[in-house]
Image (cartoon, rainbow, N blue to C red; front, side):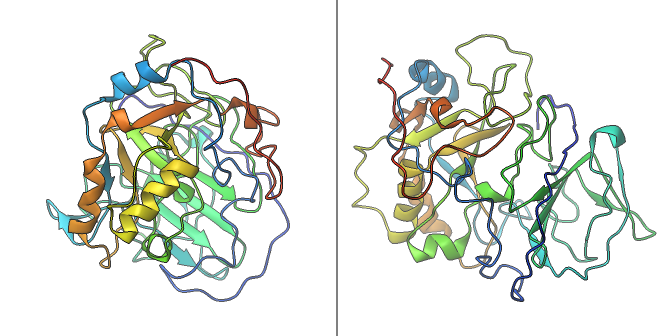
Length: 331
């Protein structure tokens, strides 16, 4: 990550939900990945284009290709993507020592000894650790995570999310991600892509962002004040007129999600990188079809009309409600 300040989450606790036993990387439908009206889970294909869309696309790189930052096998010796683990409610919890202890959820965290770390055990990257307690529907996320010899762990920051609540972190607080959002809900998973339907927005990165955040993000990660740069939390979508008929089924499912739910700017990184889970079932040659797209095939979206209150991730949409619209602004 580029310039970053860590922060703390305050969890809005809902009643625990007992769910069926699930295995790592298996179907997680027994736990909601946030409520149906969460900003992650509502369509944005009818929302107006942001008035700064052209500038944002130019800054991100109109000629830069879309890039799936996930796949099978390894790249430079590291698994490709952001992994996660699921645990039962009986998983022993361990102490985590934070670089920013006053701004992280103290835990403890249910970290199994063999938990996958982004990039692998020897990674020098973001080293995210994501864990879902499938019996209580709680998501634990850590940034820059490493084990200690005594069984405890250390990390730069940590955040805990009740998956049954559309709660946001306090304004100006980060999470395990620069924008202060959860990471797991925005990952592309093999099972959903292979099913042909992805029903949520996708996490994305751009090299440079503005010193600002917009709902639902809670934190910025830049010193740039130029308004032509997008803020953390900016939503983008694939243009509705982009023809998907020539793509293989899995890339087509991903691209349709980018039309319907879009992608959310969550961190500084490479241009138009979208995040997903490493899985040996991915065919990297098929995923490479996504690189046919470029920044110019996308548009920035004004999603402010979805907000109910600035301190909640809940939107004003329900499954049966029409999408609120505003007059389209010129690009």
